[in-house]
Image 1 (cartoon, rainbow, N blue to C red):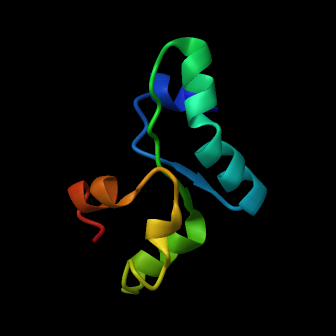
Image 2: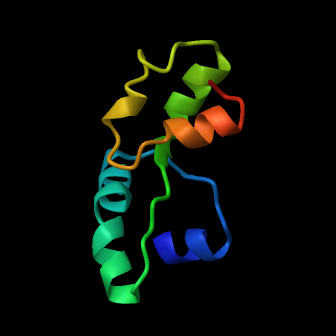
Length: 80
């Protein structure tokens, strides 16, 4: 999924499950080493995006707890 997201130039991957988020967030370096690339695609829970849409502060949504920081992308897109 990381390779496909990078190939499609995705801004982020949005997930519903904790295991999916952990696997996709933690394994990007490992996959990148195999491919000779560096992947840094934010992996965000859909509930965090819903929280932003409803006006919750990013700090309260624990967005800083991700390994790949989603804040630069969220800021660039005007979500925060």
